[in-house]
Amino acid sequence: MTERQSSRRRFLQLTGAATLAGLAGCSSSASEETTTTTATATKTETKTATKTATAAPENQMKGPREGDDLPKDTNPSDGYPPEFDTVPEKREIDTSSYETLRREVHDVTVEVPLVPIEDAYYWYARGEARFVDARSETGYDVSHIFGSVLSPAPDGRKFDPTDDWNKADRVVTYCHCPHHLSSLRAAMLLATGYEEVYAIDEGFQSWLDRNYPLAGTDTNRDYTVRTIEGKTNRSDAGETAWAFHPGTDQVEATEINADGSYTLELKFVQVDAQSTIQIETPSYAIQAPLGELTSGTVTAETGSPATATKTTSTSTTTSTTNSTTNNTTSSESYAWQWEF
View 1 (tube, rainbow, N blue to C red):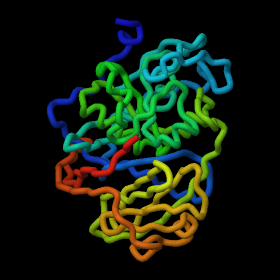
View 2 (view 1 turned 30 degrees about the vertical axis):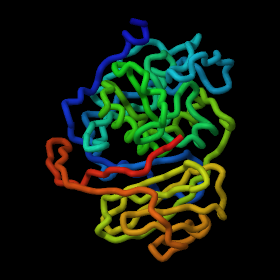
View 3 (view 1 turned 90 degrees about the vertical axis):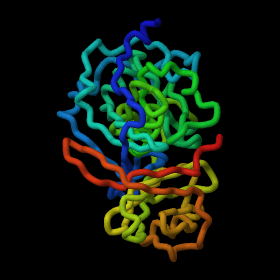
View 4 (view 1 turned 90 degrees about the horizontal axis):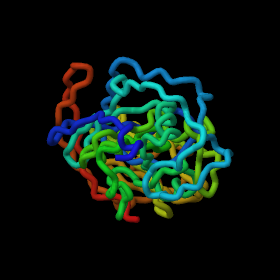
């Protein structure tokens, strides 16, 4: 057993078909600003706070930074960065204090812990976790965590690099959402037997903001956020609204509010106001230029009708948050997934 393997600790145990519900929406109230890239969702999100998150140390802890003369990554499929000369001093991390999300994937429910960015970086710099990018191939190619592998949410890709990993290893997933796609990918890994998987709570943008190591074709990119406000039937509340760019593999998703409204924040690259974007809710699927979608409220009458690219079915399960039992609509199955 290697030193890396012996340093990893188990966190989650799956007992058969555990119970998981969830959709962590990727929406906020920004219009045109800078942040990050793609997303995929299941449904209702249940976020559970257990105590308080591990106190993050000062941002200037020792360790590699973007722009340093970094060693070559000789094994890019293992999810680890190469061994760095300067690493953070050893410290204890209380993972039991992390907030969690309940996520349902293929009828299995899993509690996904959200790791603070500084704890994720600590594991990264010390080589104590494998890193998984849960976004799209396009987003990954532009910029990603140095040493991480591409394994899009929810199910990964054909010949996925995680297929050959030891399921006892610690894995950290991330996306630009900040943790919508990443928690979905983490849930799938846990549901298939991985024992210790975390999603970065603050997302990829926080990695960029802290100048941590990157790789890709444009690591200095500023990400423009384009906000789409939409409206669908009230009966779709708790379901998912999606945005696709048919020209690339990019996708964004968010939860539909109780009144049928939703907000999608697109961090797509290689698009402009004329780019065709497809919007889907359980009640409609339409296509329109991005400029039109961001200039008013999207409804079933916006743009032109489109063929849905996915199918969903819902059922009712029971979830528990802080000892309070709630009936929530939670189960979705997906016909659409990554094909590369």
